[in-house]
Amino acid sequence: METAIYSTALAHKGWMRASSLRASIRDAFLRSVPWREVQAPSKIYASRSDTKKRQLLNESELERRLIERGYTVVNCGSLEVEEQVALFANADMIVAPHGAALTNVLFASPSATVYELLQASYAAITSASMSRIAGCSHCIDFFPDDGQAFLTKGWHCDVDAVLKQIEVLEKRAPWIGMRSHAPSAAQR
Image 1 (cartoon, rainbow, N blue to C red):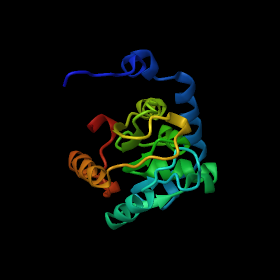
Image 2 (cartoon, helix red, strand yellow):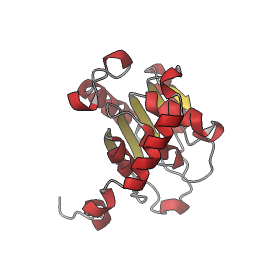
Image 3 (cartoon, rainbow, N blue to C red):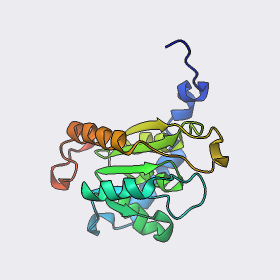
Image 4 (spheres, rainbow, N blue to C red):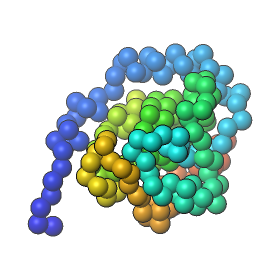
């Protein structure tokens, strides 16, 4: 590699510090929402198909391939807050392009794995900071785009690369899809 360019914000530890306010919000929601009583899928894909901003242009292909692998596609914008909390609290594996839906990883189980897809010119780490508070694993992959960040006309992910990374993540966490075998935070 001749040149490497990165944002110092990504390397700054202060950005990833767990917020006691966010942690108290997590605790309050998890106490008030009966998420344990909800039948929810263990593997979810949080779609961006309900927004015109930062569209993942090949999202329908990605969704089709994820459904083949046992994922449930959800549009968080059409769900009540309590439904979103229950969905993310019960999920073992969460895959999603960066967006507002990933705020819900704040409610994820410490045994959950989050795989976030990001366009290269929109390096946001807010979702990763939510995962840190929840205590779950968070993986981010960046994909080429038009360089327009939040003004982009859209971007593409490499669907085959995404599926390969999901295989790697699922092998690291063999309990994914087997909720009754998920380890507690102390066992991780």
